[in-house]
Length: 208
View 1 (cartoon, rainbow, N blue to C red):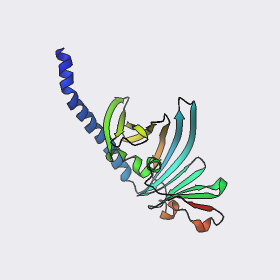
View 2: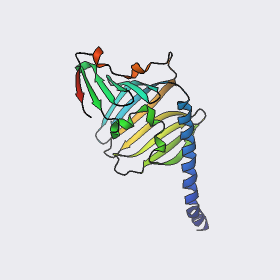
View 3: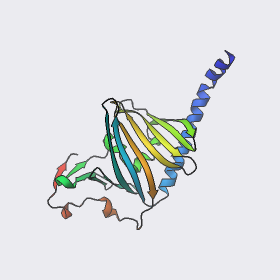
View 4: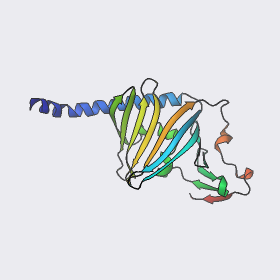
């Protein structure tokens, strides 16, 4: 009984420590990424729903430069020029223009995903196993369409290895990072912009 009471009394301290440890680990990862003028990330994107026996996997690449990004995955190229998101679908010759504030778009934004823990989340260091820390983030806004985000970090190098968004509908979005490097040469800002003049036959659908 005394041991049980001691554990109960220690719970607030243990929770606070886990939160502080989680933030320290993720802050180091974010700081390391921000040091680079630009970044190229090779990753695997998996969407799965166990209850519906659904699993879809795609290889992709993401490029970041400041607030700009470009994602090539699922035969689609997403450009973010610092203002709007352009989703270009070459097979159907169509580009959609979207507002980057939409929740679904925020979760795919590589410039935000590595620093997402500092924006409206409770943080908890769940475990550290074989040099990898597993951290869970819980949104303070309970209206979000996901219950939590799991992040795996290699503690020795502060490199993020995997990020999983657990959807309330049972659909999980998994991003496994294979490599992160600085592209050579550093891409120009135009690399992150969809130029309609270079694609005169593409239909533009403005969804803002």
